[in-house]
Length: 167
Image 1 (cartoon, rainbow, N blue to C red):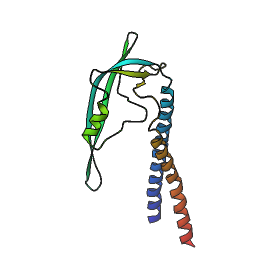
Image 2: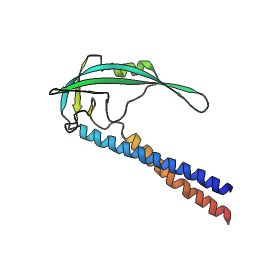
Image 3: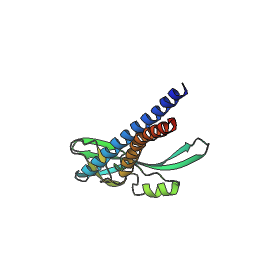
Image 4: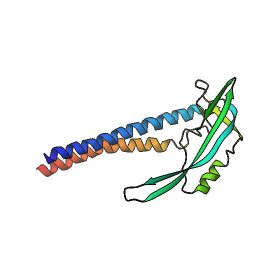
């Protein structure tokens, strides 16, 4: 009975790692493709409607709390009669900072009511970014590959250990 419980628990963790890896890999590849496509998107002038720093707390299992600061931007741009609003800076994700000062320095390039270049998807005009390209997308792809590799290697190692201990 104990072996069945170990197998079920191990199977759950292997499955969770595999699913997590597939999801990370999917979003990493998708963001990389979108970032590459954005390099050919047309540009329009937009306006910053919100700029600030969000404070985030994360407490680990031992009770230690980590505080991070996340720059947040919202902007509007107009195409013909339609006005669009977005908060996406780039497809590489938003960088977080350990100090409010550094996050404020990062957001200072987007002053409230400031004019900015917005790159928008001509096929989906509500999709836009302020920074073109794929910077930062490889981390998610690498994490996905590592999680998938762990989900494949862990059962193999478990089987090797099991069969060598049985003999």
